[in-house]
Amino acid sequence: MSGVEGALLRYRVMAFIVGVGLLLLVFVAVPLQYGANQPKPAAIIGPIHGFLYIVYLATAVDLARRARFTFWQVVAVVGAGFIPFLAFVVEHRTNVRVRAELAGTPSPPT
Image (cartoon, rainbow, N blue to C red; front, side, top):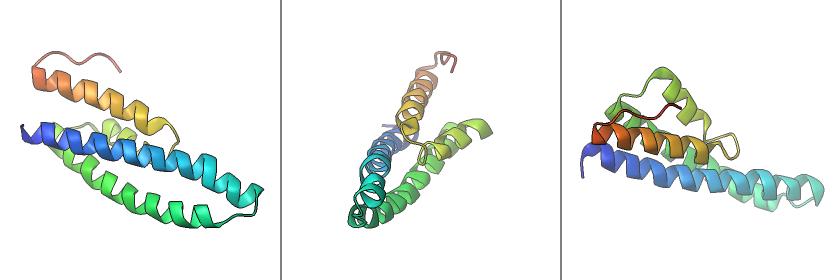
């Protein structure tokens, strides 16, 4: 496994974890906090998501460095951690593009 493949795998795992955590925070914990006066889920999930987002950023920066991302690709990857559902879209597109580059084929348009 090359350095880029390992970085891609780590990025994909963290993108999934952060994406699911953000969905839980936005669609479960925050509505419970404000709709049912139950602040505990947000108080638990919020800091966990924040910590995991930092780990996600580290894996994204590692992949961006190894795969030589453009500025806008880095912006998309960073933004994916705090906009619901975007982590899954950006992860898929990043995976397709990086795998195509590793195989030596032109990447599909994004």
